[in-house]
Amino acid sequence: MFCIFRQSVVAVVVLAGLSTQIMRPVAVGQSVVFDVPAILPAYLIEVETSATTDTVQMEVPVSLLQNDSKGIELEELLIAVYWSTDANLVCDFHPKTIVTSDIEGTVAVQHSTERNASAGVDANGKYANIVGITGKLQAGGTNRESQSFHRLPEQELLTASGFIKRGTGVYFKFRATTQTTLEGTHGVTISFKVPKSWRAGLLRIDCQLKGKRVGFTSFDSSEFTKNVEFISVVHLNEDVLAYELATNYVQIENRLLDLQRQQQIKKPNRLLGTLESMVDRSPKETDWYKRLVYN
Image (cartoon, rainbow, N blue to C red):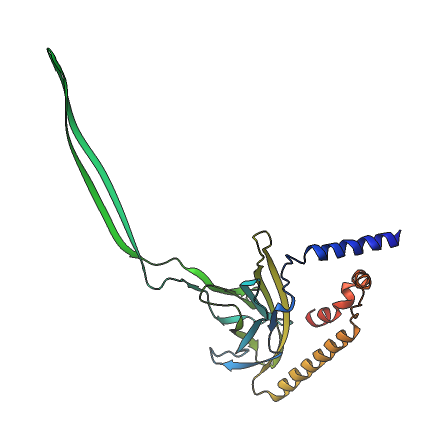
């Protein structure tokens, strides 16, 4: 019975693959790649004097590479930045909320109103041995009113930003327009209040990309969402020891990545073996690196 079920599954997969060869949806996968530096410097800035806290500022560059733009439209990018362990308050961030328009300058608007009025007298008469005579006297007039003025064009959201996690993190939302693109590097700047003894910390950057897969027809088009998380080590600028600790952390993380790659199950050549590996593979076994680093 297991053999029959397994053959049925193989047949369904093969038939599905044959039926989608002509109009196969575009897979996002490696078509869109994110990246964030593993180590970020933080700079002390003088905002206000305090006996217990300092203000540090850092720039977080988030890069987005679109390897294949065919059939994929990028619409919205959401970046959330917050501490992985500590809960330092945000005191400032950039960019702020920005709106834009495709129209430069103002829009000319013109309204016209037309009114028609008429008044008339009708006279009908008949005389003996003479045909009837009908007469009509009418007077008419038209009133036209015209107004012309300029107004600002409608604005579309380009960038939105604000606080998250009770003021200990910031979100940034970028939207693609006819004049801008989401591909490239998006640099965000954040200032945090930290204790006087602060030298380094772990910063978490969550990225969410929304877009659309465009097919041959409207029935083939569909929306997609891709989520990627990063951990970056932030160290106080010119602090040599803190930088060395950050470098050691990144080296250990790379070793864990290599260990995970070595333990991954290699993809068999046969389709049946691939299906069995997909069924037997446990998510906990493959996501141990993610749970170890991010949790």
